[in-house]
Amino acid sequence: MTAEQGAQLAQLKDISGYLLAPAPEKTGLTRALSGQDENGLPVEIAVVEERPLTIYLNSREIVTAMTIGDYPEYLALGFLRNQGMLRDEDQVTGVEYDDDLQVVVVRTAQQTDHEEKLKKKTRTSGCAVGTVFGDMMDGLEGLELPAAQVKLSDLYGLSNRINRTPSLYLEAGAIHGTVLCQGGQPLVYMEDVGRHNAVDKIAGWMFSENVPAGDKILYTTGRLTSEMVIKTALMGVPVLVSRSGFTAWGVDIARQVGLTVIGRLRGQRFVCLSGEGRLLRDIDPGQAPEEDPKTRRKGARA
Image 1 (cartoon, rainbow, N blue to C red):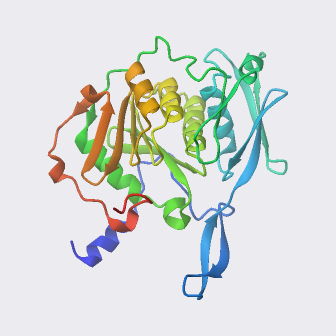
Image 2 (image 1 turned 45 degrees about the vertical axis):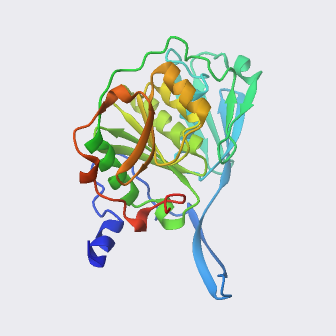
Image 3 (image 1 turned 45 degrees about the horizontal axis):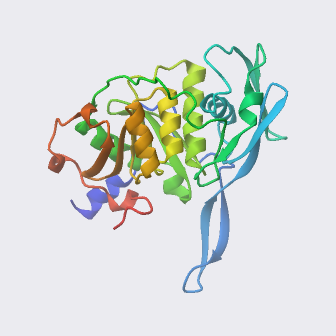
């Protein structure tokens, strides 16, 4: 590949097919800050913004999350869904966001059981400090995920396309991404300072739009931790993919619920530690494109 071809591959110009894609040019997501580099020369770089968002369920304050501030309604809905505070039978009557107060209120037709969930909190390993309310394993017993197939050609294609999609990461770094995919097509790409926020936004969008999960793939740039595995399984998505690594407990839970987890997906390489039966090896890995160094994320340059 020539240098000119590599430059052309660095970022996609056509992001058609995405239902929601990052908007790195959107005002308020980054701020230009000045400083000095290692040689003492002046530099100015884009830095991701971070702000608090307080989530209410009816009249009860649930949590304050640190977030980049986009899609607060989806973040609130997804957080409450993934914590088990919003059930399938709960009727959401409104989602109200106040930009001045940085507050989002989710209203339901009837009171929920969120008080029980608030009695017990578990802090997770999320980069922005995630919190799981109630029993972390609640809802996993008896869970059966669909027997969907995953083509290797789709995995490689997704990785190549997602890593080249214009994003806050390529603009400023210091952020995680989560992408809802179907086959080889990325559909919804969310970013945030914590990977748990990004996946909660996906869950909120799916809940709001009544999108089925059984034929979907969830791609994340973060580690495959117990929290990420649990959230993905409870969303009903059968396949979780990351360019990062695993935690042992995350793999244990994935095997328990039959979730396919694929990590270290970089270029032609990956490792599958659970749900290998869903893999359809339709191409030789050597046919997949190598990863473009211009779009490699932190930790993938070795």
